Amino acid sequence: MTTNQPAALARTAASQLTLRRFLALDAVVTGTNALAYLAFSGPLGRFLGAGSGLLLGLGAFLAVYAGCVALLAARPRPPALGVRAVVDANLAWAAVSFVALGLWLTPTTAGAVWTVLQALTVAGFALLQYAALNGSSPGVIARSGSPR
Image 1 (cartoon, rainbow, N blue to C red):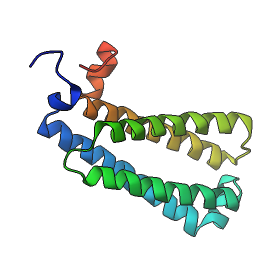
Image 2 (cartoon, rainbow, N blue to C red):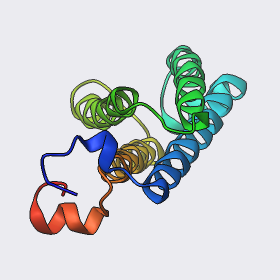
Image 3 (spheres, helix red, strand yellow):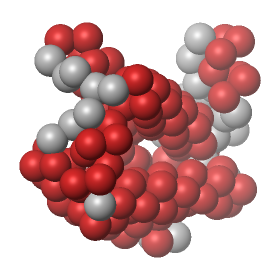
Image 4 (spheres, rainbow, N blue to C red):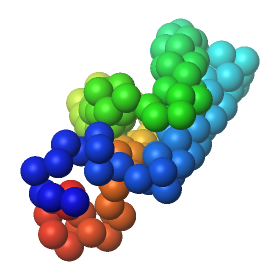
């Protein structure tokens, strides 16, 4: 294999399976959050210090997003463009979570902790998905600064 080879050709069956698993896990976690926000927006809103309307809106958005990620995970070879869109969306979600926490949300302590933990989880999914898309491990990216 040469280094000029397109990334899509360099991906192995093992990296495809890994990628699909990370996408599926992302879809399950996101879908679970969506269902919780939709079903329990009132009690969760009080616990987290967020309005129930905000949680309902986030729940609806996350339900659609989780469905799209699940469809991508179900493909034998998820298209790189779609995976990159998920990675970018996950990174944007994490960044907006931190910005919202600093600028306009006034959560309870539990809500602040939840916001940070979910943002870090989503950023972790982005890193794992990016690494799997490029056929490398997260450790390789961290050591070299770029995928192989």
